[in-house]
Length: 307
Image (cartoon, rainbow, N blue to C red; front, side, top):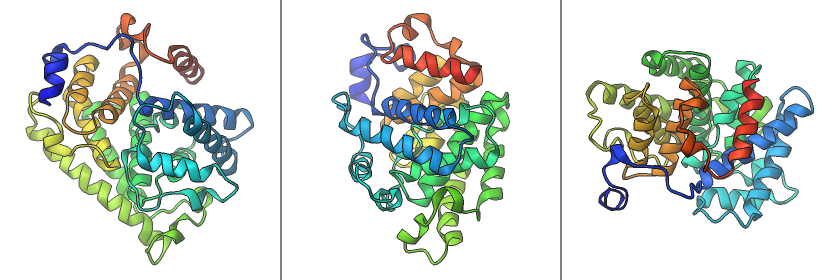
């Protein structure tokens, strides 16, 4: 925190750097978005139709010379393993619940016309390609759900309650069609036991978030309330905390998220996704939007799914 403040000044006045170079979070978000677009161009979104193009996009990102933004180790190890003929379940890092699972999942929450089952299955599958831990799957599902609810007009005030209800409803549901035999690579006795372990950790994190929202001061580092965000459930809850502290002030929310002691880029990535889903892309300053890296592709994908 002291080094961020020394470099950027007071957190409420932080500005976008120039040039506005993104991190690996946005690169992987775009890779996922391209994979979804390819899959849906071929027909109804389904497991086999989604897995192959997303896998190819992740491998392309892995080899890209632009993949020089301190990417997470799990993503790199898994993507190296995906660059083969083996089933994707063998490449998945079953022990990792890093935030790389859900930092990139926002596009699935924005794509129109998906059923609840498609959205949940796709969110968990894209996580499982790299992060196979059940908490990573559940946190990715919840993150996509939050983006979807906000984009559909849900009120921020009731969002945490809706997410907790969703978690309880899906706690024992293993998406066999989307995940295949992934659970067999774990130590769990059954697919139900496997997925329940993940949902229970996410429910505990949502409970921590609900408590934090009753007492949190905007001037205190959000990581002190809900965690540093290096793991998926904490990235979700700390990103949500930053957004929910300032639901109608997206720049303030984004600045608060960026000025944190934890995984600041992932926390800010998710906070921005929630704010954008709630308020629309037009809330961001024109002078910021005009110089963001990959601007053209971001706008193209946004326009596709807004339509």
